[in-house]
Length: 274
Image: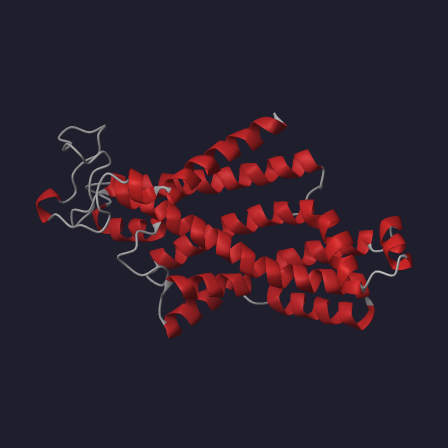
């Protein structure tokens, strides 16, 4: 059962990754092309569907399947780059604080406490609202706000390994501190950080969808799944599938990432990092 979740999560992520990477070649239509004569065309499982529009069209006639595929690229890009940014900040602070201890660790703990006191959604809304919405700004804001879990896990695991024999042997061999941190400490805490990365990626995708739904995330006409839900809310009573389709896609992607993270945690025996 443990491996089943890992496999299922890997399959889901693999499918979304293929869609994201090969989007220009597998999209049946131009995701930005408008056709007002085909507004709100119904998907294939409903009566009256139009050829070439498997998932129908949105309120201004853009192909929904093409926008959904392109939206996978946006979601994964935001998730991956946010994890890279927040991971670089959090892992650096956590490893340095856990390894050196003392006043350095006190400063790291103070930084973590300050970050935990900041409401992520409210700060993200304020920053994006003041500076304007853009893909780069969304990634930067989320990356600067989601590093705390990386720091907590990196600090605690570094404190566990800093006094082990292989670290002492590296000191005895005359290795420098940066070499010990990079070659001895980081590889031995990487399994814990990999699990945290999956959790943070799912959170970043959900937060982006939230910002886009509120009109402060990825700017149109980029087909973010959160933005697709926001654009479809005016038609939800008459054409509910315009919200249902991107909502299910977002739900499945986040579930897949969490299944992958839980599977990695069980497989690597890292314990509960949440």
